[in-house]
Image (cartoon, rainbow, N blue to C red; front, top):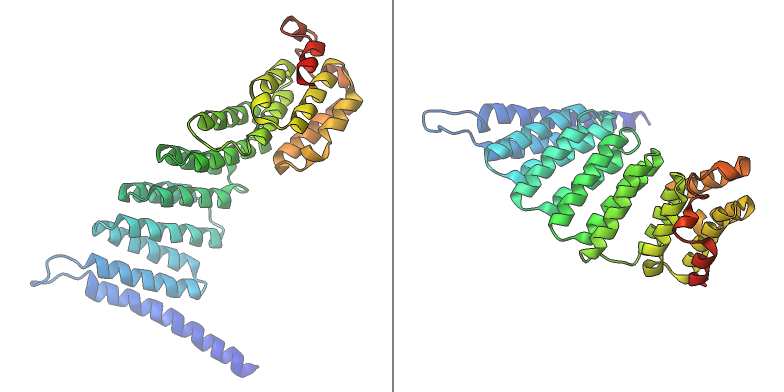
Amino acid sequence: MVMDIGFGIWNMWEVWKEGYMDIYTINKASLKTSLLKWVPDYDSAADEYSKAATCFRVGKSYKESKECLMKASENYLQNGSLFHAAKCMDQAIIMSKEMGDTSDMFKLTMKASHYYQQHGSSGSASLLLNKAADMLQQSDPESAIKLLKEASNISGIEDSTGQAMEYTHKVARLLVKLKRYEEAENEIKRQFDLVSEGGPTSNMGRVTVELFLLQLAKDDYVAAKKVLHEYGMQYCEQAEIYMLDSIVNAYSDHDSAQIRKMLNSPFIKHMDVEFAILAKSLADKWAVEPKEQVTNIDNEETESSPADFGGTLC
């Protein structure tokens, strides 16, 4: 047992010693100029800093590893190697996460994604933005939203509409979690715009239900009906149409029992967790004050009657 511990400590020392020696080598050799060497060897320096970073990471010395990675990135930039500079920043972001220091992750991610794009690797840029957003969504959801929006924009420009829709949907989920329903609605509608640009339609029935729930969350019953008319008949399956139609009719009749039943249906409960929680909160509200949840119910007959609407669906 004592020998094992001693061997482990020796290995740790060897790792640290190698890391320090690499840095020593960098300062004494790669970056040093002379009469016959007018320009520092940035490429070799970057490689040595990367090796040192690996040594520090193995030794769980994440702060030093991050510092070496940032030095490596600087030297790669000096040498015009944008992709490798971005890659080092990518790894530095992970070191920040390991340290529990998320303060500069947003800035590093945006800078690295910019370098990836300059290099022509837009796919790597959007993947990095998505990965960093996943790291930040609990501690800093606002930054996560900004990163995902940027990832969606990059994918849209590169004609990867399916990927853009995925990132946009993640933004919508975060906004629902933050109860920012107007903004979430805009992101959901952007998915429909991307469909019109050639995006996949396979999940748009579920997205339609999500938009429908957002209108109910805003107490806008008429807008919810319009969602069913405009998108439901185009993208939803018959079972989904029946469910949304039943909710519409239950709202118009102030039938709180039916509203709670439909909003607690298995289909709703198996949606993305943020929208399932939203539906449950809507159902719970009707258990308390069923006749005061929707501001536009009593005036909506001026546009179309509930009976006529239901008849067109059945």
